[in-house]
Every structure is written in structure tokens, then in C-alpha cells.
Image (cartoon, rainbow, N blue to C red; front, top):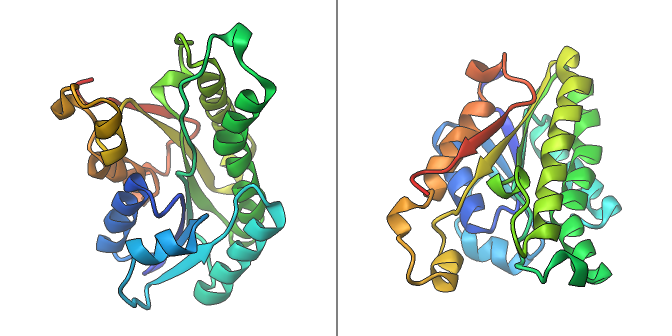
Length: 233
């Protein structure tokens, strides 16, 4: 990769997004930081920095996502890596009580956001001659768990899409892989599970380093991997 490569990070205002942005920034990458909320982006990245660009956009809006990617390319001239962090989790009812709206919410947050981002970014990578894509799936996408049917199915779809894209793009110099975290040590998860042993969870900074590696030249031979990142949980 060239000096000062560019990464587009979706879900950039979240706890993992901040950790991933920090990891890439520390390695000299330029950052295109995309999130739904302009206010959240500004609060997370308040200092002016020529090396990053804030991109408020709704990833469920294909046209808005494409415009954000065009802004990033106009600013930085390239897009060497895409980190699809945007997503969400809901405990659900049993599968037989899952409503169409509950099912669709998980598909929208975890699958459709990814599809819209790759629709916008992959053509840019193909034109440039290559790139790296890292998707965030979850350990919950490997095995069905009670009350997580819709969520688990959506994260399983992320794994299968990663594998399909890797097979489609590997000979075009685009690596596509995904990470499978267990429970991330975030303020939201601590609030939801106050009695848990937080020391066994995965620190966002640790997951960020795995994502950074998958976007590095050292990972050029890795295609279609689904890498568990589980800490001690």
C-alpha cells in the first residue's frame, strides 16, 4: 500500500469505531469516518485534523452511502480499506414469536448496511487495483442461541457474504475477511450486564488491532476468514 492509505470506517462514532479509528490513525492512515449521527461524530472526533473526514450518512440509504463514499474519494483520492463496523444487537422473543419488524431490524442493521457500503466502495477498489474489506460478524453467527434468532441469522449472513465476496474478489486483489467478537467491553454492555466479569470480555482496542492487521500488507494471503476474537469469555 502507498504511504498514508485511506480507510473508511462505518459505525465510527461507536465504542468500537473509536478504537478502530485510533488504531489506524496511530499507524498513519487517513480516516473517512461514517456514522448516522453528525452530532455523535462531532462529539467523538472534536479536534480538527486534516487526516480525517466526518461523513454523516444513513447506511440504509443507498444513495446517501454512495454520496459519502464519493466525498471520501474526492478528499483523499483513494480507498485502500473498508471496515464495516455498523450494526446492532437486540435480544428477541423466541423465534416463533419474532415479528416481521423485529426480524427486519436485525437484517437492516447488520446486513443491509454492509451491502450498501460494499456497493459503493468495491467499484472504487476495483478501479484502483485492490483493497481490503473487514466485516464485523459475531460468535453468535456461528450457532443459534435462544432469544437471538434474528440477530444470529443476520450475523450468520455477514459471515456468508464475507466468504462469497472473498471468492469473487480474491483474484482482483481485494481481500475480504471478517472478525467474530464475543462480548465487547463497552459502556453499553457494562450497563446491560452489571454483574458480569468485565475482565473476560474483549477490549475494543484488542479487536481493533486484529482489524488493523487484516487491512495490512501482512494479511495479503488471507481471504474469506472468519476470525474469533473472544478474550476469556
